[in-house]
Image (cartoon, rainbow over all chains, first blue to last red; front, side, top):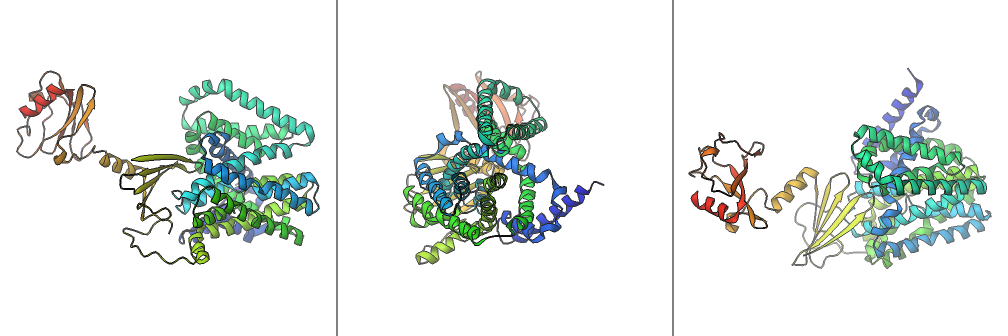
Length: 381
Length: 157
């Protein structure tokens, strides 16, 4: 028997245990995967699990591209764009913070991106799991995430290149893909309509990983490649079909990926300086007032503004891509901040989102509602 | 009635329906097929009075009931769907009806009226019923044709 099977059985068992523990309390499972990894640490044979966790990250970025691609921009309401503008102020502020921390401009840009981008994948999952999708703030938060992912994909293309050739290679490749989708896409889609689901799943997996490899080969970030694959698939109108086909595979990969991130985090966090810890704290605090202000500009009520700011706390997939890249480029401080931010913000964000209504009641000293509620308790009191 | 539609990236679509009284119903159709319903009383912005989750199947059933596909209130008369000058009509075989026990082939169908299907409770819909099918109490006949022909058929029953 291959040793990876043993590692997989162990990992899947741990994940299932973690998810089962929190399921009873109506708590989302993602942060638990991270914490489980952190607890198990080096005892988990991480190498044996490959390529599932890496594939999980690529598929995650693919589905972020699929759902949060630039074609969503047309559907965004004005309120989401106003909120997104205030949210984007985190970029220049983070850049200044990086300069103050003694980083060079490129390192500071990395830090700004790490502080700025919230995790669409984690936040969407939290919103769905906690049944908050119908609430007015969810619309604003999801719109803001579309803008964030777009900005970060561009920034990653800019930062990810190894020197100017890598950047140009990435841009040329992206252009080639977009042209291909523009001119050959419709014919391809008509052809794919007749294919079986299984074949489409395999083709999609080959397309995503192949694109990521190609981007890596020209010296650009493979994460951008996976994101771009999703954007192109969405542009071709394959969104529903691929989302449906990839969902379960991606969820398994993502769970393993978060477990591995947790298990590997201890090594990276050794030699943690107070500077890194301070930057993480400032990074977490920096976005709260900006998003609160953005929520106000989007026309949300007092309580909903607070919710929208809390919703955007979790950082995730893009932070880990940025962190790995920063480490490669010689910015270990930024890599530490990126990973630590994920470790802290996912469980903290999940808690904050879960208890946002209670928090708002506490903060605003709101009297309990007197009107009787017919029927069951509402989703979000 | 006012309907607003918003895309929720990664989640699905949200429809906000404001009815005449000012009450609002928010419906989220998830990509997974799940539906979330929230009801807000008029003037209430923040907190739904009730919330409800439906599976895809339940939501379709509810939708069909709301659209009057499954049951047609007697008070409103029989349901007619208009297809230009043609109509579709649902005719129920009530207890004591002359139709009960009759073969489809013996139905007095006037020219221009067609029997599309027979809907028997607890059985799959029977499209294009053959002449040997025997009608039972509780069946619903789906009849289509010109308005005069369908009216004539209803009078003859």
